[in-house]
Image (cartoon, rainbow, N blue to C red):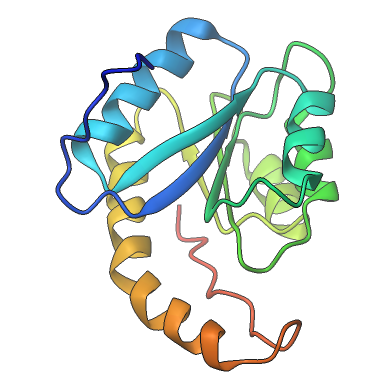
Length: 158
């Protein structure tokens, strides 16, 4: 992401954190998200410990966490297991999404799962749907007392 980067999508309202160890996939995904969806990637990590440190910091606020399962060090499953904030939508993007792995991701709190090899368009559509509902959810959250907001709906159809 260069300093002169501009948003191609007019609404760019979803702040995302990306956990991906491949630099090529990470940069291509960031570009696709910026150009084709309302997502702004505000941080990245290539291993579990870095991801958890970023996500645990009170200064780092995001709406969406996109997580690869296999990382340089650690696992995306560890990131899912440790990320309990109901205000964040957790999405798995991986080449390894067997039926068993999809079940495990759901059990650990994933909202949706997408295969890197053939479901990038579905991920982009998910992000657009997330943005469409975000305004209503944000308004409800503002009215709710801290800790009393209901978790976002889960889209596990992928």
